[in-house]
Image 1 (cartoon, each protein chain N blue to C red):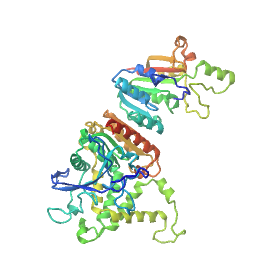
Image 2: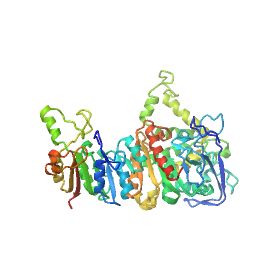
Image 3: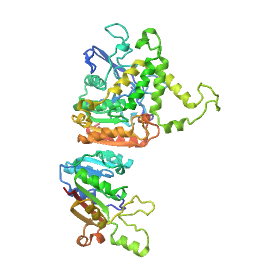
Image 4: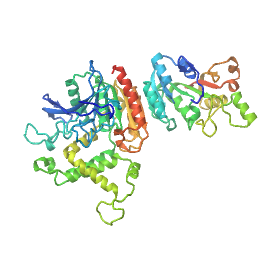
Length: 209
Length: 382
């Protein structure tokens, strides 16, 4: 997650708090790119959720271990072939899809492994980013995307339209979607024009039988 | 026992011996009628006896894991870098126990001990042991020490195999299983290396079919070759390149077959010093236990099914430069635990040295295990 300022709700990063609301108690969760393990630790403590977090960064692995999370130091770019079909109730990927080598292959894996998938990503078609590119002609940065073009880990940025296009291609059912601003608050207008006004998109997907 | 916080050493330690007179039934069908277990302890057992950690040793290890036996010892225990006050396995919080496995050299009953039935050295008559046999014997020590549950069992390499076996065979006897640089079973390549080592020993003319004690000799050449071969597999290509390169001892090529390259000198030194502190029959036994280890054998090759009884939480650690038990082997353990729905954390530590990295103190390695064990300690109020 690259957000420079990260608002929190009940001690949990706001986007993770939103994801947490979508997850039913007592379920099995696989968290791809679990960072410091905050979401998994929260779900374990408040919803008796069991599962694993995958993380590649050593410091995050240590933080997750310290948080008592079942963290596995695994590179998402190596694929998830080791996980069985439908072995988790939810496969979550929060603000990581733009950092992986093959987002489409990863979505395939998520749909295969999880009964439901929850994906969040920064919307690259937000009006402020569009304006920066249109008026100043530079690669836009924002509070949700603070890196510069040459040092960014975000190699596969996409827009709301792009993502839904991929979902159509993958025959994935969009169970629900939600859009928030950089402070992770939803505004009514976002629902009307999510691809322009939504800064961060949250999707719940399911494999169409 | 005195410990020193400045050096992080447990200080001077004295091994203890438990003489067991209850026979131990072994996987091979034989029975050990009586046997000694030699062990060391570091730190203090708390009032409710809940802070005990068992250390399982690898091929060339023994009970002397930390501290010093005498002021003039050349080296401390084999895992002294990681065991002590304030260290990765913190003796301020844990009561640490390390026992020499049956068959090990210079400790518990082994091939060099006297067989009470014959009055001779066991030698080749010492039964071939398995990892499960060791776990059964370690469980006898647990009972003797009055420990109902180990807060953690920790082991690297062959030691990690014992940790897995504990978690499968005695699930109620441990809370945490820490498996470092290990594998769920040996590969054909691993077994092949062990076989060459064994052949080096048994074909040494001074081996005398394992009865060299009575002949008053030692199969030095065979044991030395076995260790030289083993040592190559414990080090990464990169580590050997960095340490020796193609450096020449005399600074020039001599067109002969004596030691010329530094790496040759190093291997000979390792081999020769090993002969003075290790036993050839023990080497055969240890490599056999390694070869036989395969907990999934009983479940038709399905490791996840073998892990079904497990209740302990697992922490699995591998090292990127380890090719003897590469990270892929640790991932097999992790995948099976995940498939079995067990609690497991896994860290893959960036390293240079190779298999022996587990004995060292890379920051990522130490911080990860320290964080893991701190939670384990907190669970039992240690």
